[in-house]
Length: 181
Image (cartoon, rainbow, N blue to C red):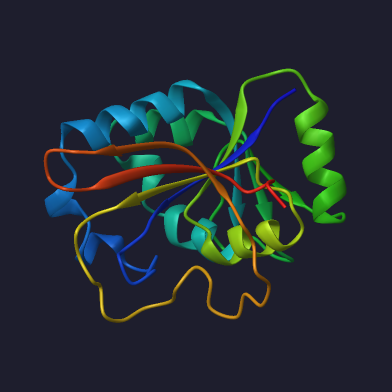
């Protein structure tokens, strides 16, 4: 069965907003290899509405690899009541209950389903126990401002560390299993 794998760029202080302001000086070859591995093992993407609206005008004309080819060619499932004005190929809005839709997608044949960006969606999916792997790329930087992944998260949640790697830039690549309650 397919897994739902969340991947976030995550500052030391938990910020997920505007990673272009704090991540990319730490985006070394090991981070790029990790991202390549992720896109090689995924063939569909879940996105929150805000991330979709931010990405839809950018990625269709981007040549930033390995992500551009992956995100443009993969089916994208957007969680939100609207898709905004931008239309992006291979996009479908999820209209039913999120847990039911995730179960439907996981039961289909294919590779893993990625949740890239979309911190509000990731937080909601963690609360509903819908994430199978939480992957974080944590550069050695405090962002200082911006939305944090776990703002408003109310429950204690033990997780099991599955993998960790430190890259040459000092970025930590962490993989957690959130199903260890």
